[in-house]
Length: 519
Image 1 (cartoon, one colour):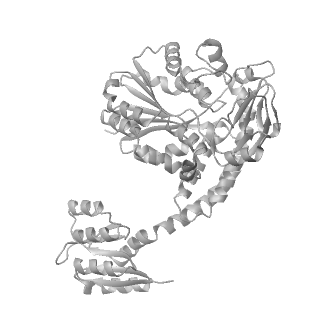
Image 2: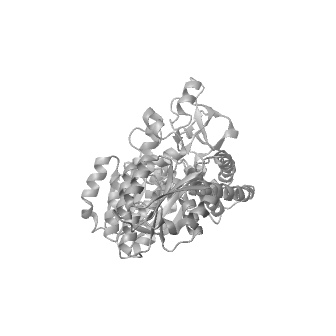
Image 3: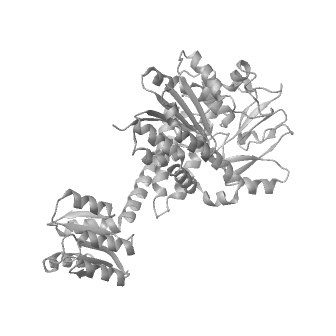
């Protein structure tokens, strides 16, 4: 392997010979320059320079000026600034100039070596450390998955796996990606069994310690916020997975501090018309159908299924004894988001403001239907990346920045997540069966019972029973429903897309985040 080539620019290079000899013995090749102009010329001519050690105070142009010139021709070249000065403005200018490190003279050889390793070998060292730590944790997670986990323990396992998934995403070495995928698949298998065993008992009060679910979310977690004198914004980002929250979290931490990071459980089906209506109404689907027959629409009914969320919310607040001035705002496109951002001041007199933001869900659907979006969000890391890119340039971030400047507390949550589907499950139904790929409901369904979560009597799960023989089935793990007619075309079209409605960690375990503005 070729030696790593270092340029050391310092007008007192004679004093550096012991340091240079030390680096040579460590496998580095060191070339020297006596001025900033000379250093710049070397970088311009020699494309094999791997890093620059740069004295700040040299004859001619300063180290900071040299840094700027070097970055203009090679922005990725690591530059380590070395100076006698401890003046704050010099340090700030150097950091602003994208230095790799900042050292104060006198420096010893080991300091130089450590700084070079950080600059040049950081990715490899991080990769090795991350993979090693995940290998250790792999066994612990696998043992946990074989235990009879509570829903609280499932949340901790899910958080841990998400952490490793995001960490491994950042590595150049992808050797552990397949191992993690296998473990996630095993986790979803066990989680499906857990839901199958406990879901109906939770809803019917037969389990004394149910998780917070869609219909109890506001009552259990949010309504207490309305007892406080300050106004609050509830932001519901449709279809925001927990990993997507973790991707946008660093941006938000520039403006807000994290008060709590919880996970709650979406009801089934994990589809917007069920899960989000349950959040705002505080009721399960069959209860909504019974109490509000004019507002609730079933799968077979024509019309929009989420047109009455504000009404549902008002009714729930009344039942909870919370008579507050509020607004409800649903954003379904960029212009609507921009308009809300520009007129946000009109909402600040309200005690409660709800914003439902629909981009992430639309992205999921567009990825299925549009080839260009498929290419942009080809896999899980790309799907997260495009979510991050959208958020960074969205009116929603503008809104959140404004709220932070007004010292207004916010809660961010969602109605359900989505799962990357791979394996088809054959199903047969009549013309009235709904079109969702992750759940089906109807009176004439034929399927492999081992591949679904089957609810023969919908009322047991507080779901509408449209016909005496109606039943619900939910796809498990990464499966999706496909009809035998034109089967291969159907499978090829929907395989490797992001869907929701069924039973998986990604769909059901979803974030509830409380943020306070930084003082």
